Image (cartoon, rainbow, N blue to C red):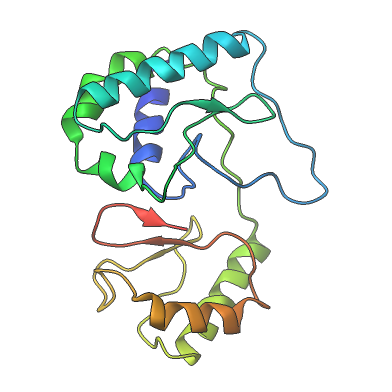
Length: 192
């Protein structure tokens, strides 16, 4: 894995969304075929490498880090268990990320599900969704950025939106956008 690819992976791991690269629970758009992980590394080798990274992360402070798993398509993932948000916890343990980077560098380029690219039509729909959210009780809700995420930093919502405000607005606007909603806030990461 090249240094640039590793840096991109680390940035994706610290960002939302993500669907975090490799942690995306969603599939491909309906009607599209799902790509598969590269056959250059066996499923067992990829899973063993993922679990080696998990153990390293645990050894450096994240004792609750979930085990590595493979999606049906063969992509590496770390499914959360018991409501534990390991991505948020990892953002607060930079030393663990740094300590385990050498393992991360050994991931093949196709270890994780590729991030879904949003079309111009999707971005327009997300802008409509933001307008709807504003009309349904959250007037300070921002428009989406170029990646389709709603960046709350620098807004009155920067420390998050209480569920009792967001849930009714999101339910009212679900007819406009029913896909993934990525929200970034001052915690440095994002939420789905």
